[in-house]
Image (cartoon, rainbow, N blue to C red):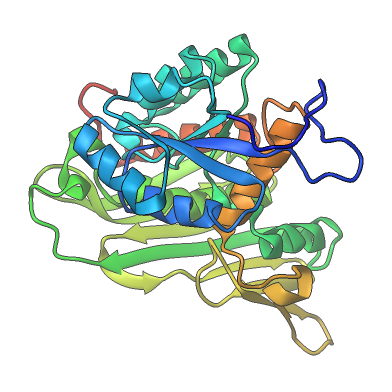
Length: 350
């Protein structure tokens, strides 16, 4: 499909023209797929050209809702579409290994939602496959693409709070989930950890790297998935992170990074913040807003995530420097260690 402009052999536009349009395929048709598609529709250099689902009726309904040209009744058909530059995998995480693998085998670049897979073994298989095929692959960790988080990381790296010593991050909500709900189904990677806990773990590791020690405790449901979980991560240099996730307690989503000379507080929504406050010794607190580091405060982080994918594709990169695959593998190893401490396993994946 042509967008009416000329693209040079190296994938760039001729002088005076806009960036090369990136053609997206959407795999799955649930709420997160809808949210991402809506974000793509705000980007003039993005085009959603196809959607695939295991239900053709669902794919057709989704395509009609968003004016998408082609709808497929299988993941393989979507992956085989040569007019798709990159596929966004929006299934539940229990299907990420299969869906992403199908797309990579067919030669498609992939942005896969978090948690990346059910375990580190599956994650390593996908990374190995992408690297073997020379294909772009990225976890949909939108937090890492948020301009405010990127600015925060710069401040920490420049020593704004001294040496980081503690990270605290929490993410929980309370819901009445029936036994049939996916959050209570071990086969679907149910529980708080992969749905919510991936955020505080990813945040802590963004600041401190992969931990040397992992300890965790949780209350388990009758199905033996975690519903209220506490995590302590330790580093041999003395740093520590205290984290929690819950589907029975409305904790909100605050986070704090404390260093030897100051701290940074995110009062709410640390995974997609609009502000943080920097506290330093003998100085007045400084509140930084998203509008201070981004021209357009109202752009959703999914849009920033999509922009990062498209930038990488235009530059011929096979992974993002903002969301590197080594980091994704590291997070999955930590999540595995947490589950081992909790005694939680996923049938067919462990």
